[in-house]
Length: 178
Image (cartoon, rainbow, N blue to C red):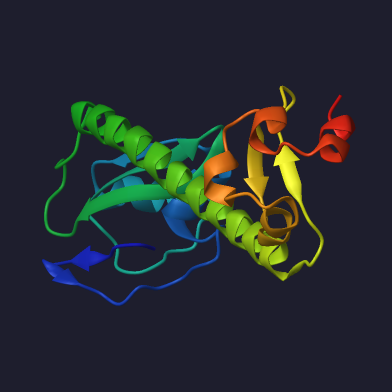
């Protein structure tokens, strides 16, 4: 749970098993759910063998957050006082918002994973005493560690993005990239 607001008040975040409650059903089946009354919720829960989590709503709407065919969460809203609060139009709007939210969540996850890998690579590059020069297939310098910059007497920042032959005028090194 990223955000839990009930009766206009922010509540402490709680974790539940993925199979618990209506939200768990959405996670397992990747389908939206719309209930217009507590009787609808009770009937569905009984048929599907779903245990109740939290307070029972009178109207409930939940949609999966799906990014790259993977569930990244569920977005749900409920009303504890009135039946028939949400309808098909609300579900369509909620699904549209959920699709955008899922993409944003996935992008953030990918960015964090890439950033973590960059930090690991930077640590390895900084800690090694060996000269390391990384190029792409066309021979453009992508990365150069401090040991390489010192060994080849170049400014690491100045050579990144340039062809290796131009960036590091060292005959023995250039032979490795022929």
